[in-house]
Image 1: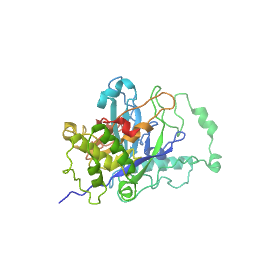
Image 2 (image 1 turned 90 degrees about the horizontal axis):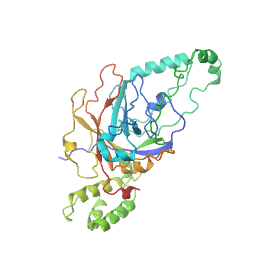
Image 3 (image 1 turned 60 degrees about the vertical axis):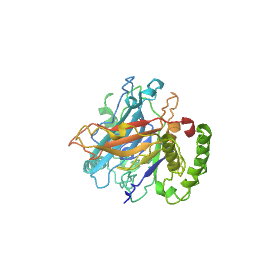
Image 4 (image 1 turned 135 degrees about the vertical axis):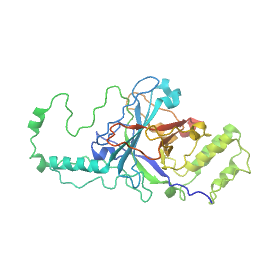
Length: 358
């Protein structure tokens, strides 16, 4: 009996992030670029490259609470955007997981509302939940006027608060300070769609074009394979055409992403990754969780289309990869009162032909 395929959610680039969102609206949003947001009572990760010892740039932030779990859950993926570290592979990439109990966050939020006299509803209800398989949530929205209530502002003595501030004190409600020299990519929100919604009505013309280019370069007959990709039974009928294993893996990758070419992230907790090249022993010899010793499982991967979207405003920063596979603790363990992010594991697969994704 065939195994049931795990649902797959796709991440697409959405609108640009404007300003410096803070609080609940910041860390419940998935995004690419910018600076990492921190959960309540958990420090934001500030990793450095193992090769050059310089700060890493945030590639993506994914808000992904697990269904049935009492924890908010946030994953950050970082990379070194400096050209000299591109060949360092895993040594120039880092993944961190942060969690906090939803009750703790609610108590903090209620205390802030009581202190500030706010009566607004919880506007984040229905924020993107990467752990949910049952419904598609709308993309995160920037609430630029949240808390800007002129009547409540009259009751606050801002002058007295400002007099009590010292230079080293953080401004209440401000975004966490970013150490100087931290590289940043331009930030965009990530919206979520279900892969199954794309399967039946999107044309495969782009995939055919890319495969024809590949066939011309490699001298591989893929027309027959392409005809099988349009069948509805979903069987992988490679037996009629003899091709190298690397070509087969590449073809399978291209066939799967053809329905939604703009995907920058594939999320499938405990599902199967979509390999771009033949997997190495890294996949079968994953290190166990450093905290609880439980095995790690696949959670999501970054896709080649993301490469062209990771750009800085004026520093000329960039990263190159084929796909980045993210593996996390199967138990999603979180020690009581833990206040620092837990490092997870990633596998980098290089792009066999980066020109295909430009």
